[in-house]
Image (cartoon, rainbow over all chains, first blue to last red; front, side, top):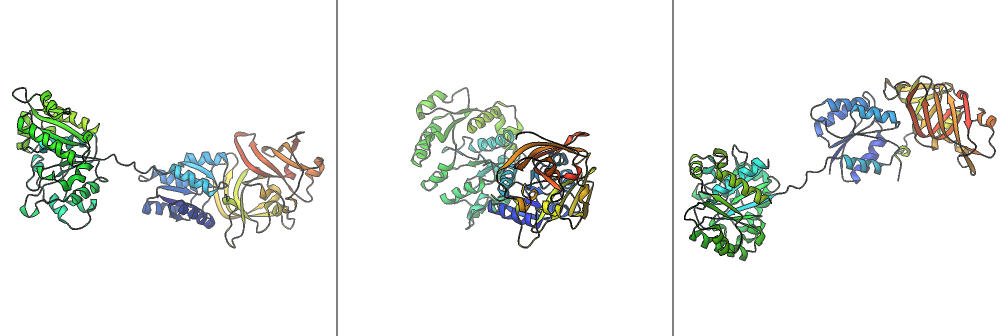
Length: 367
Length: 178
């Protein structure tokens, strides 16, 4: 539905067009002359204007010129709709800034059709991605990768990106970003009412990179006891507001009641370090995800902290888990510095091998 | 599918909006015709003036620009060269509206400052003298009209119908067939 401003001094025309546009599902704003039209334009911000030429005080041509000269409405489509139907009238209207010119001899349906062609297209459905970062084994760098991947997405895709740290208590995403949150995901999900984007927004804290963080609780009273339905709802509510939502998932999230939430995530990045305990945990994670009904093709296996010495070879890992490794992130000494300083690797050492590998990981996640 | 120009709500008097051309000016204006047609209002011998409402004045050398606007005006019928109308209806007298066996002919005529081409419809044998007689109808209806100003070739006006003042016609040429 769009707002269409109609300006005409002929009440019959106004009524007829109002009827035709309402029937087509549009809201109509009416003005009987150019001055009133300018006032309505300022006050109501219509999506399109239909204006007559022959109006008292201000002709449609002058109206067009004033609209085009104004800073806020220079792009709004204007259809001149007039009983002056000569080619020279169309030419004059277009020179004055009109988008199109239609004679009043056409049918209202034809006018509505043209209006709908010229209306600004509704914003395309956002190609949203909710991405989960998960590992059963601690210390594999899940939060570091989640935070840095979010920054890479925000910067390279120029997209609104949210990070939700679902650690029940004391998650580290805020720490890695150098942020001091005053609210947490625990406060958001403890409310016994329907979640809305407006209600959640004040709980986010913005990082200088542009990403928004919904932090893990830092107080015992706020500890997260998330139910499946609330995680589903949180993900759903964030979709219209963010192009990407990165969920930093704790071990405890892997529960039967969170199956539908895991199924919503696409992809799920399963992170492991190149060691035998991590391999065992990863094999278990893959089994659990299959049991929760997560589609196999949504899972991306990432080996983090890869070193040239002593670590399990990637080939061995792939053979053991019977799936390819999507990305390898090298061990990065600068990562430790980044964690300790609260400045993520992508920003503190953007030219490091680790940062480059994270950037490649992000492009893999997008494809 | 209803046409906007034929819409008339409740008791609002019927207004016909058209372009009226004199030697020097274009007047885009409305005429309140009530239950009559514009061609019959023009033929009304009770008055030599045509009352206009919502008058938008342009000059013939720059007919897109509106130089003046007025709520009311009065136009001397004799000084009108021709009128371009948005529909055929208002150009045909109510008395003559139903006329079978019409013959269409290409017509070319000149009035001061304009040459006009279009289709002319005629019943029976064509007689120029009868055609130009001004005793009953003072204006000649031309269909699919194109009126051009020879002094400003880029200035031309088109429409489904025009009413040309017979008294202003300088030259009239009609083809043998449509």
